[in-house]
Length: 382
Image (cartoon, rainbow, N blue to C red; front, side, top):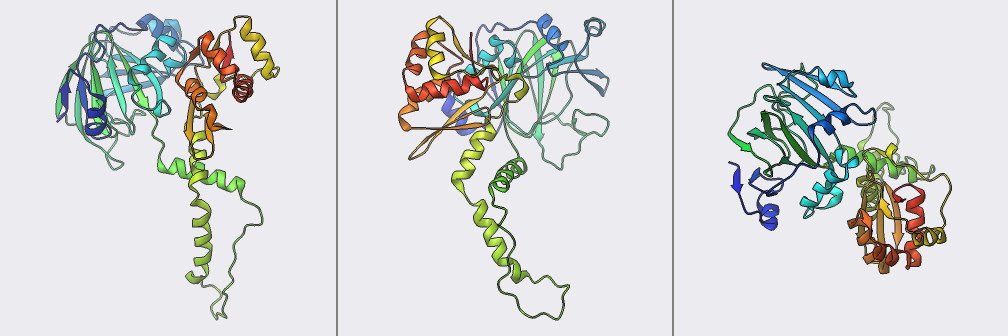
């Protein structure tokens, strides 16, 4: 059964609930005010570069349509039974991006994005499950959530919808969320939300790459790094009167070699850092046309330019015994251990006050790094 709390304890949540069972947190954000309104959501749905979806319900059937939508299409929608979903609103609206700070007890690099849904009375996306953790933060209005059993890859899905809806959904418990309430749903727990009147909901989702994705990505890098001369060998050949037979003993050496090649923890860590910071929408990060030099940054910041992160960029770091690794938008920057405080600042801020910028540019190693990050578009001078 889903527990319900009013006082949230971070350590208790991580120990007892994270990726284990749902938790309803009443008044997680007391006096919550929406950072966006339905009119803004409708406007975003009309933008070509923004990923939007419209889900309509008629009895037990759901229709699904990708955006962008015209203003006329939005205006012609009925008064009930539809939901408008806008993906990655945090990359477009800073007030929405700030919601992620409310969950900063979890690693930034795990967070995927903030999806905002506006639903009319009776609107929802149907009973389903996700393969990742999600916090459902209720905004204006209210939404009724039903929680069902845990699912897996064998759970039957409806063939008549792109929404991955469950063939059979059995609600085990039900909650009504009001503004500021949060419902945490672990991976593969089935759930179904239905709007009561018009409502807004903010879904803070987390990255959860499959083992298949990781294996493919890591081995692709290994393949790119392998020398062409590395090829199949069979040193222990014996005369064989059956030329069509594959002798398993001939493959023992090859398998051992492949295991040795892939069993490289340090290489995997560096690959993972790059992989997990790859931006969701890399096309939104624009590199500079003319390259900046480290000394150019000093001059520009002295003329009151503000140093900020691109909203689409992802930063993370990893400390190792002899080196500090910074990962930004899928790229790797090795640094000395003396740069740790500066790297932590870079990862934890979205914009930098003048005193923070001064601290960064006064470190020669970081000044060179800032130039590289500005040139690739991960940082911006305003």
